[in-house]
Amino acid sequence: MLSIQTFAAGVLAQIVRRQPPSPARTSFAWQLAVGPALARVTSVELEGGTLRVWSSDARWLKEIDRARAGILPKLQSLLGPDAVTRIRTRS
Image (tube, rainbow, N blue to C red):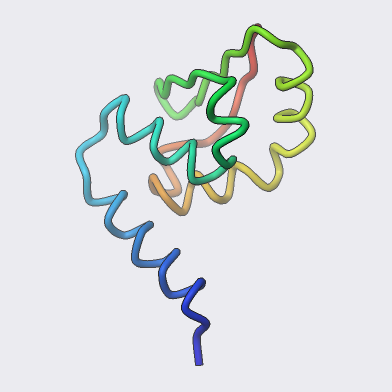
């Protein structure tokens, strides 16, 4: 038996993956993957499989670097395994 949280996450990932690629879809997936606090202090852009992440505060970028191993699989689940292959941080 699946928990409602696991089921809902899978359904949401399917809905997001079906949407055409766009900056809004990328931003939405980013918010789901990192949570509202990190999403508020960062900007993202997806280009050629690389997700570029900007923040005016280097401390947030360090946090993203530390959590990269957990963030990348979440983004791949939401956007597709080939859509995001790496994350690069920039200040």
